[in-house]
Image 1: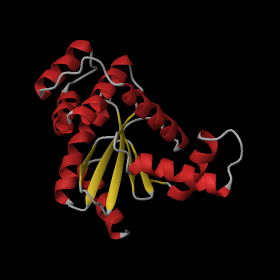
Image 2 (image 1 turned 180 degrees about the vertical axis):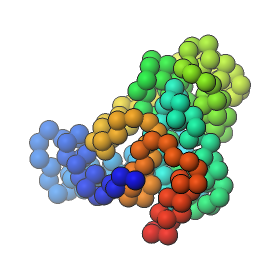
Image 3 (image 1 turned 60 degrees about the vertical axis):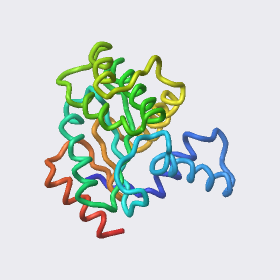
Length: 203
């Protein structure tokens, strides 16, 4: 698992992505808090699990990624096993236009009908191959929601995710922030479970 020191990551992202000129100490502190809050506390990013977690996992994902489709079922399983764990979803639409469309629809549903998000997420992840407009519309229907058009905030959230992911060196999905480590790609559930357990012990 790739080691990421969160403090250094926040410093790098805040300095490079949020300011054209050197930051004062106070500005730097505010910028770092903004990035930290976006990763772990952003109300516009879907989340499941503990309300007041000891450990928050941040999962970067794509609805057209075959390994994300294999990894996604782990997330509900892990928060059921560990009641002190939360999972935050960040979308990186790397693969196609339908990656962006499905991610924006999912984020819009999270804000308007959060109780329906996981049903939509599971349906979108269950499709083999790439999505198209018809499959996304069918997933929305199965989730019992209607998105006439994705909201503007969904695009802002995705752009922020892309900036942070670039600074973290993430080049593909899935990628999962577990404590101070970054897990790039898919691993078997048993290995993922062990990583989460170890991260909890180190909190």
